[in-house]
Amino acid sequence: MKIEKEKLKLYAVTDRCGYEYGEFLKRVEAALQSGVTCLQLREKELDYDSFLSEALEVKALCKKYNVPFIINDSVDLALEIGADGVHVGQEDMRADDVRRKAGDKLIVGVSAHNVEEALAAEAAGADYLGCGAVFVTSTKSDVTPLGFETLREICAAVGIPVVAIGGINGYNITKLAGSGIDGVAVASAVFGAENVNSACGELKSLVEKVTENG
Image (cartoon, rainbow, N blue to C red; front, side, top):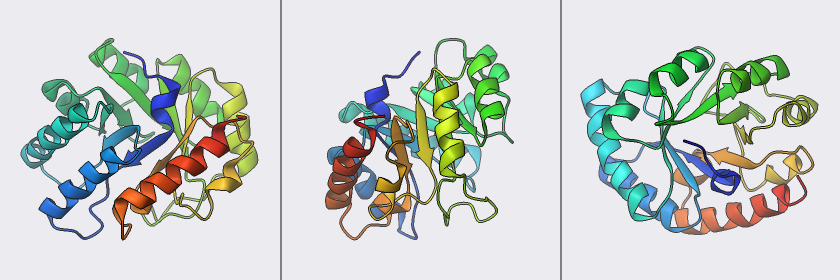
């Protein structure tokens, strides 16, 4: 299964941001209504059954708004519920093992932090790359930000779409113009926003400008 570049423009990665579950789901739906083009469900602390239950609810919302639904890390869960794809980091299952297990049933996204990792992921069958962190981020405290030149080198080196991730918000997103990215991944900039709808609208408009000339 492949994913169109246009579907990677505004890629939301879920973040509870301290909200109760019901409010979190409302925020997910608001994001899907307001410009998010792809959604990844990321839950590092939940047990399998709880993750499964949440994934089924979020999958239904994504289907309602015709937005690709990606599961973070768990290939087994993605296959079990019929998600559109899975995203793995360098410390998770190897991309070629993911592809072997999933065949063509899943979109496979892989995190990459340099050209070597990007080329290896592409060769292993990745459909897109998530590259970062491009800015300091609260989601991962132990990550050194990826330089603009490295991001640009990755984009020039691979033939699959590249999504920038990490600390991106409405104030710094324009700094990524000219890098060659196909989209941006955002978490707290959407799910922690006072108004999710307006935050998504603003980010969607900005990412269109950032990606229009590559």
